[in-house]
Length: 225
Figure 1 (cartoon, helix red, strand yellow):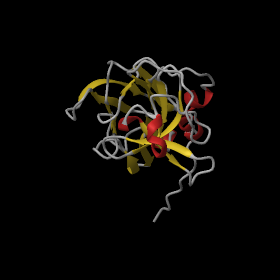
Figure 2: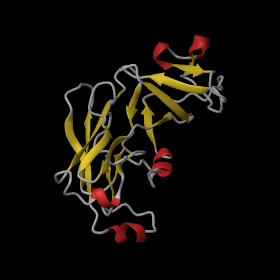
Figure 3: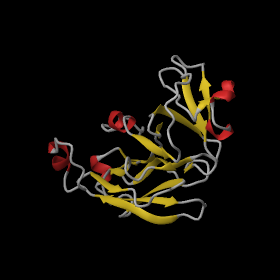
């Protein structure tokens, strides 16, 4: 039996640098409030242990002191922990993003983690936040994958509102591509199509039958975020 070797993805470091921005619907009030670790927590948010600092309960931020430095986070409507990277005084929050991934070896998919169920997609229905359509882009990395972003405003009735397709012409083209473009050759991107989105779900769908795709020879894993 062939042992599955799992090398580091060449895009792993790049992926970890991508976060999702969420715009908040409130007039920012520049009042200094206690922070959590390296993150400043401006009003109307506040640390949940000091509830008098926040506007109301939905604005309470948890501070996990088991990390060094402490790590601030929110819970979305699925009780999924959303790690906060920073909050600006102008009302924009940055959280660590989720990935839809699929990993291959010749003629088969060996692992996938797709945001295709209630536990994995981002649901902001219980929070005073919406997905920013100006600070975000949908990005796909891989070969022969139809990377479709699924989004909805306030309900779980998801519709296909945007996405993009990646393709690979040859392994040499990918290796020689030494720039920051993302125009379809192993990487694609599209705009966030709507304002006021509360729910985001990403599905990564192969364009060709697994086993006949160039992805088996070029990338170990593909991803969308």
